[in-house]
Length: 245
Image 1 (tube, rainbow, N blue to C red):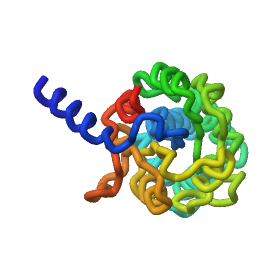
Image 2 (spheres, one colour):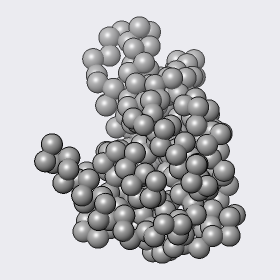
Image 3 (spheres, one colour):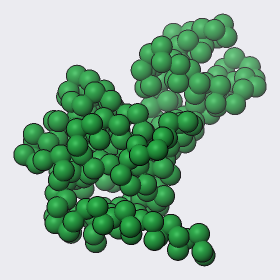
C-alpha cells in the first residue's frame, strides 16, 4: 500500500509540469503501448512451430527461437523473410509450407492481440477532454488498421501516421512532424506516449514534445537513462493523471 501511495504521489508531482488546457493532442505508439504485441508475436511463432512439427516431425524449440529471427535486424520486424531464414537454416523449407507459415503468422498475430488493462476506459475519458488522439507507428498502414480494428480502437483516433505514409521509421522525426502539421499544433501542446526510449521518447524530446514512457510495455532491457522522459507510466490509466482528468 505504501508503494502504491508513493507512486501516486510521484505521478501527481510530475503532472504539475502540464498546465490544465495546455495539452491539445496525444500521439500514441501502438505496439506494446496499447496492447502486448510481443506476446501476440510469440503466440504466432508457437502456432508456426506447431504446424511445422506436424508436417516435418517434432520441432523441439520454444517460440522464442523463431521470434529471435525477427529481432536480428537483417529484415524488418514484420518481414516474412525471417520465417524463411528460420526454415532454411533447419533444412525444412518448402515453398508450400513457407506460404502456410506466413498465413499462420498473420492470422495468429491478430488473434492473440490483447489490450492492456483500462485502455478503452482511459481513451474514453481522454476523448471527453477534447484531445486529438493520434497513432504514430512503424507498422505500415494496412497492418496498423488491421490491429486497431481487431482490438476495436480504430474509432478512437483522429489520425494514423504509419511508416508507408512518411517513408521512414522512428526515431526519424517525420512521424511526429506529420502529426503536428496535420493539426497545426505546437510541440509543447503535444504529449507522446510510447514504450521505447530510443524510438519514441528521445526523438520526441528533441522536438520539444512532452513525453510519457510506457514502462509497462517496454521489453527492451537497458534503454532507460536519467532524464530521458517527462513522465513514467506504470499503467496505461496513469495518463489520466497527466492529462488533468
